[in-house]
Length: 224
Image 1 (spheres, rainbow, N blue to C red):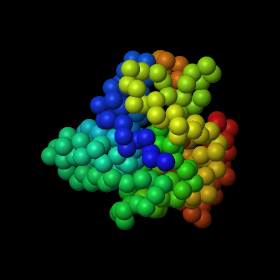
Image 2 (cartoon, rainbow, N blue to C red):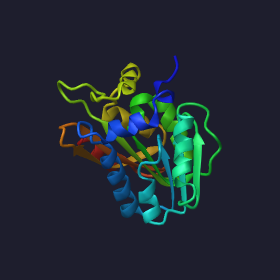
Image 3 (cartoon, rainbow, N blue to C red):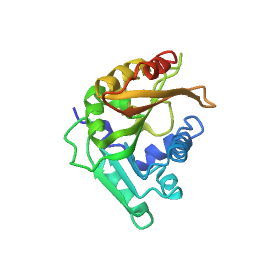
Image 4 (cartoon, one colour):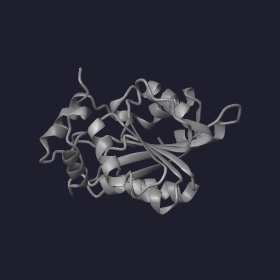
């Protein structure tokens, strides 16, 4: 089955995400910006970067190397057109995070927002663990279910409806289990609520081995 993401025009996706009924584009960029300010990484990767939403946040804080990964080659080309001349250290790759990944130098922070709903979670996390430096961070943002609401919000952009065939909301506890198996320890979790009432879970993990993680995992499990 062809992945619907490779056929959705970037203009449809961006207008959908920025529409008042959805309102997610600004939230994704703001959360990314807050992570950059809190943890000050110099090397960062955005998985599912689309046309570069949030790239400006990395430029503002002086990230020296910014890696963008997306399954849609047109998105990558548009992101290059938009940002290659203004963001030093920009690397863009068309790749499927649950498939064969290019051999990339690892980064200090990986931001994967609204990605795990469309992939094989354990496989994607194993690839992300290779993209993340030892003791580096993974910020994973998940959409939470809302009673009476479709997972993909209705909007005038019909191409987005195709995502219903592959989208699966991932419980935060399931992501936590898979992240632990991939070598990550959970540091924190918070719930984000939009004006629409839709909620999202932002979990922050550290790639670590041989360190005690019980209290950290307990923190996250009590809030999922």
